[in-house]
Image (cartoon, one colour):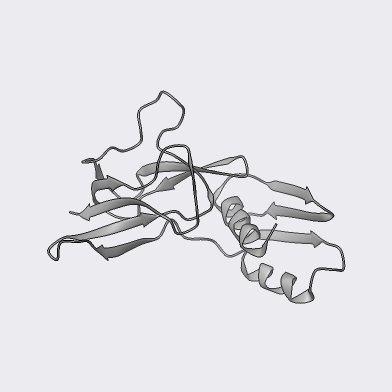
Length: 159
């Protein structure tokens, strides 16, 4: 498990109602306990890990922000779209369960707080909410496909 995955896991725990998570992998054990105020991280790792590895983790327990949205110029000079990007590594799902209708379709209007998709990361299903108001122009990720951190998921026309 690398540092970026640990950071993302801490962010996921902070957003959820999960009280405690323990992961053991190849001689590496990670336990994250959530308090009301902030998450607490406890490590027990072999000596081969550098000391500088643990220091930045304490700062990673700060609350995370929702998915990044940024303005992007498209091929046409007159069109400005906002891209909703993945806030984590995981599997992208357009609906809550197979066979159910997608959270949003092309042409749908979205508002801040509206769920646009789910990303499954480490057996946790995370609802991704919009931070912007607009209309969905394009879905950039395929349903049930893996997505990377900061990967564009949707193009939105601001309204």
